[in-house]
Amino acid sequence: MVLVGVVIVSVIFGICINTYRDAINDISAALTQSMKAYENGDMSRPNIGGGGNAHKNNNDKLGSVATVTVVCDDSGKVSSVYQKYGSINDENLATAVSAALGADNNTGRVKSLNLAYYKASSGNDNVIVFADTYTVIMAAKAQNTSSVLMGGAALFILLLISILLSKIVLRPVEKAWVQQQQFVADASHELKTPLTVILANNDILMSPGHVNDTVTGQKQWIESTQAEANHMKKLVDNLLFLARSDAADAANQKIICSDVSWSDTIMDIYLQFEPVAFEKGVLIDADIERDTKVNGDPTQLKQLAHILIDNAIKYAGDGGRIFVKVASKGSVVDFSVNNTGEPIPKEDIGHIFERFYRADKARTQEGGYGLGLAIAKSIVEKHGGVITCKSTESEGTTFTATLPLASGASKSRFKRGQKVKAVKPQAGPGTVSSADSSAFSSSRIDSGPPEGVLDADYEIKEASSEPSIIPPSIPPLSNSDTKADTDENGSL
Image 1 (cartoon, rainbow, N blue to C red):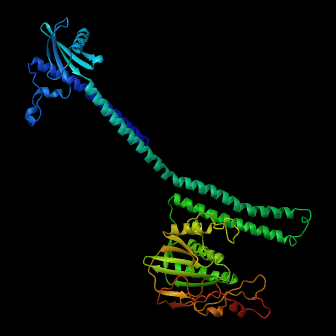
Image 2 (image 1 turned 60 degrees about the horizontal axis):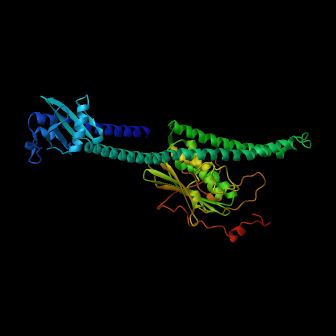
Image 3 (image 1 turned 180 degrees about the vertical axis):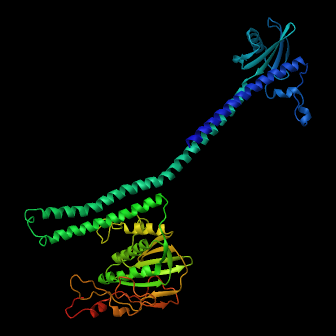
């Protein structure tokens, strides 16, 4: 913009110089032509109108400059005055003649009268041509003033455009700077808590009352330290993932992709979370289209499914419901996870994919560090997709990740054959409860259960129509349902 401004100023300066030079040239041309007209005895007025033939007279070159031709002797006595191209009173004429005869040069100016002159000898007489400079110079000044005003207006507009563009250009930088400051503050906050707990545990272990205890006696503090260290490791791993993702984006690096069975990936993660949902008293159901494939990184895609389903379980609420759906639409496939629970406030919807952002500003809700959705967004965008969130009181919260399909998909779907109430079984400490396998009596048609998943039996059913994202057939838990699953001791 500075360079453009310099160019504009240079152009305006050049226009002003040329305008003034043209004015001086017009005056000089008028003086010369008037002198030639006197010498040739042609003192006729310039012709106007009548086409090109009317302008063949050399006197037309006088233009708009008024001239007066004077014949006088060396003493300044005027013998004749030709005022066909202008007029001058006797007083000013005498002053002008005196000034011209007294000058050494044949050309010059009489500034007091705004006149320019050109003198020559003709026998014993002097011929002096006077030209008016005021009109021409004032016209040049007016033109220069207009040029300066227009140039100034152009510079002012350029300044406004520069300010506007600079704000637009700097907006992402400013946003990145603010986000970086917030990122550092949030990371410091998240790391501070586990570090404080670890240091407190170490202080206890090193205190006089505990320094001589056995490892078994210190198990409480050791386990607490281990848990906090694991939390810190998870946080650092997430930060490292995002840092590598940002570095790859900056270097325009692409992930190494292969065809991934998106249906099987979602099914595996879904089955892994069934026991978790069961423990938390949350109903989880699915409608997964078979044989949908995407091109991408298998590990990152599993992480995406893990993040969204885990997030839904955390915020579904007691007795809540979760519905997982995979459905292809043309050349893309939608992976949707819907959960009941408190809706996300509208003012937070636009920020939930930011790092460390939480709708719970006090950070009292159960969950991680506010990095999961940021990682999910990064994964989806790296695979050429988009992720959106919709949250209402009536429909709950739905996260939808849309990815390009790697190949066509059939219309077969996995659907839960029977709805099971999420009731905690009687289990001893340390055991992991799972859904009753008899409630899911089915079998994997082609390849059997996913690796590492026990009792992961399910069946493939042909879906004749597209179900809605929230299955209306899943009833909420009622008191009667709870009582039906209560043992003789009255516990769940």
